[in-house]
Length: 154
Image (cartoon, rainbow, N blue to C red):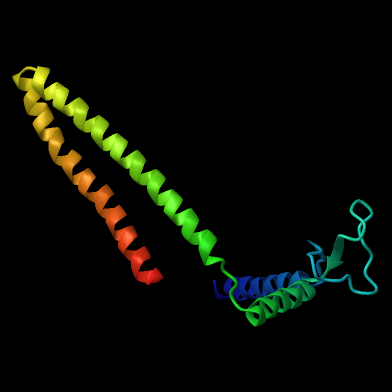
């Protein structure tokens, strides 16, 4: 039993070493992004000349580090006006949809309650609890969203 365990352990260690070593020698392909240059000595792909090049995993990691450094040095460039306009539009659209759905469901429940039999009226009364809870959750979420936006803006 111990002999099999030691042999399996040796095979596992050798397999892990082979996988680790092969990871860094397998070429990967990455598209050239705007603002980067092709290193001398690399050959562009024939199907997409000047845009795709062969890299090793170490070069890809190095390019990723360079990309992160460029982003950190430029600072966060977020256009708050566009973000605020989009947020307000989304808020208004979702609020209107929520109001329409709430009114429609409330209207259907009201009509069922007025025109239904006693069994139907009892069923509508049991459906009112989730309806009211849903309205509180939906409109409460809109209130929280608006309060958070007011706090962040001011």
